[in-house]
Length: 630
Image 1 (cartoon, rainbow, N blue to C red):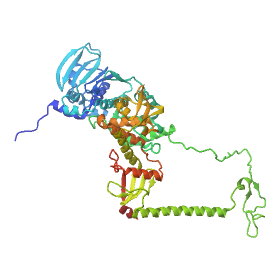
Image 2: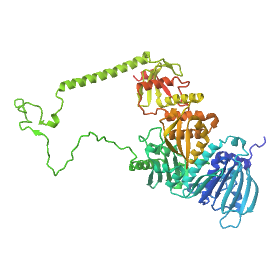
Image 3: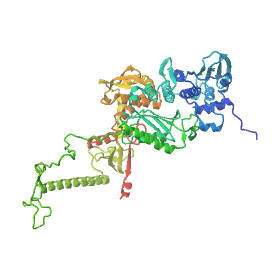
């Protein structure tokens, strides 16, 4: 049998590697900018055409490359960052694997100009799909200028599945924000289709946050700072009152590198327990400084996943640091004492004599016996006080009888309701409206309802006890209602009395401009104020009284998350976002009538068991399971 195993050509191996390293235009920008930072650049400019689909150009003033280095840099596993395996444990550079440039060259057309500082002439390199077509001497500015053209031109399937330009540009802007946060000593400029989206200058960490996300976000932050032998933690967290229901800004960094670490993220969120609702998320920007030998960044080619040697200890230090900051800046809710009508409590002063506003009865004998009464008038009172006794009830027996009667009536009422509930479970009560059926065909009488923890609605069903999530149920109801209104084109715009201002990030602003025509058809009218700020002039009547800024940012988030074609899915996304914004949130107490109406409307839906995102709305506890408890 002939041999069948062979070595793959470098061009094929590079395309395979590119599948992990280069996922979209934002990945190219990440790798090239990190290379620029490693080369010592303090000024980096990014130029884009068609959201990176046509051109990605990164210009830096770093060290530049010689003729030989420029050619070798695009070979697989060629790097200047490490020399041996031991260097992996002392990494202080962003890149080290030697895969990024080779992967980029494998799926795009490259035009590279570079020159060393102090050299009289540079070099120009043309690469087409891993194949070097030419290399010639050419005048160039000190540093490196790389142009990546027609990304995925030779991988049609990958190019076909790139999202529309607005989605890809949003991904680029989010990647740019991450790069800007960890490189605050570098001037960064982002230009798209000849429009400057960002022009950031060197600044402090907090100023960089304000430059990226707006001064309003900068004012909401409180510092977090601690230094131990294991880790040094610095950064900022938001006050609880500034938590967001959607699109929270949450960034974790280690040794100047962005990372995704759910464990540490959970540690920060845990500090906000009982300070914010479960639907809200705080903003945070936390940077960890640790010994490079105690972390492993060589987990994935993107280098976003990082393993920590002292993970548990860092969790405890991080939690303590965030809680300390929230406490020092009075982020925890203070006890609000109602001083109105409060009794005046005198302050003890030892220099003053004690003054009693009472009349002492000299005939009182505390050692009285049966033959020697305590008082001459047999009165049980010790003091005769006009302040205490005036207006006090004297018919104590009648007062006690009234208390006992009301207590017995309350107990009878509770016991009676429990008996009625048991009868309802066994036989089914007569509802105040026609019975509704869930997706399993069982009848659901909504007349017998109660609320648990202001979150769940309990109602008997023929199979047992039905537990309904009130928030998810209302989302389902409102989503169907809004979709029906869109189909019937019955949205009515209403001008707001006081226009509301909304401050967006650059990424959100790009998405908003894309969906603006669709928002106007729904009744939203927005006016630009400059610097990614907008004024909301009118909204649909169905969302009147709600925060327009919250609704708009929710719509933007849904559009960014899905990345679907706007023409086919926008109204579904808008309906879902408005339903989330207007739904009855967990924690709100409901009246019996409100609960009955909610249950009734839910089971009029064609799909009451699931939310539009597919989450479970209700669950039935089987009667056999209930019986087993007793």
